[in-house]
Image (cartoon, rainbow, N blue to C red; front, top):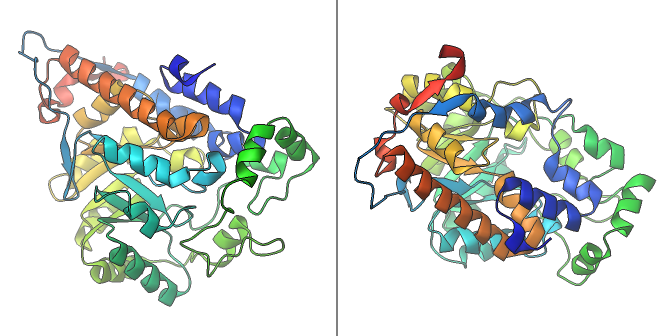
Length: 384
C-alpha cells in the first residue's frame, strides 16, 4: 500500500498501522477505558443528515473562515498534539509546513517534540500553543512569555487533562516516555525495523518546551509522572482569569463541554472555547463534542468563537459542525495517521483530500460560502 492509495481516513490509518510499531500506533489510535466516547465522536456525525438546496449558482466556493482573529483559508486546522516525532522523524515541522501551504492554522503542544521557535521559522501563518497548567506558577508565566516571544497567535489552555486518562492499550504494551516497554511491546518494535532506523538516525527525541523541567534520560520523570507531579488539579477559574489577563491576546479553553463553563469562559475574557473530549482519551462516557455544539453556540456564540474537535474524518463532518454554528473544526488523528504514514507528503495529501471534499460537498449542498450553512441544512434522525 502506497500513499497514492490513500483516499480517506481509514486508508491513512491502515498505512500508519503498517509502518508504526504496535505500541506507538495504539498510542495514537487508543482512547480511555472501553473507548465508547472515541467511537461515538464519529457516530454523532453519522446520526444527522444533510439537507441540500439546488440551483443556487455555486460555480465559485469560499471555504475561508475567521476564528479568534485568524483568517484561515479552510474551515479546519491541525490541532496541537503531543510527541509527533515519535510518529515521524519530521514531526511538528512536517505538520507546520503542510498547514502553512494550505493557509490554515496549526498548533504546537507543550509536549511537542519541536521547539516553538523552530516551528515559527516555517512561516508567519496562524499558530496556536496548547498549554497545560502547572503547579509552578512561575513556570506558567515563563512558558506564556516564551510563546508570545516566538510569535504564537492563540493560546489554548487544555482544561480536561488535570490527570491522565485510563488508556489501557498503553498499559498492555507498557508504552511510556521514556520507553519502558514490556516483552510484548518490545516484540512489536522488532517487527518494524525501518521505524527504528529512522528514530536512531535523526536528532535525539526531546521535549523542547519542557526540556528544563522534564528530562528524557532513563530513570527521569516520565510523561505519566509529568501529569501526576507537575500539573495542578487545583486549577480554578480565578487561575485561568489571571492567565487570560496576562496573555493579553486571543485565549481559548480546550476541553469545555458544558454551557455553564462556556459562559464562564466568556465572562473571564476568553475569545474562544474548543468543545472537546480529548478524542475520547480522558473521560470515557463523556458526551460527544458535536452533540454539544448547538447548545453552546446558542448560549455564547454571539460573544466568542465556538470550535469543535473529535471524531472528524470527512468533509461532510466539517460541514455539519459549521451548520450547527461552530466557527472551525480541529483535526487530530485525521492528520496524525497521514503524518505517521508518510510525513509531510502524507499530511498534505490528507489536507488536500479534506479540502476537495469540502469544496465538492458545498457545491452539492448549494452553498457558496461557509456563512450560508445553517441548521436548516440538518435533520437529526431521532427528530425525523
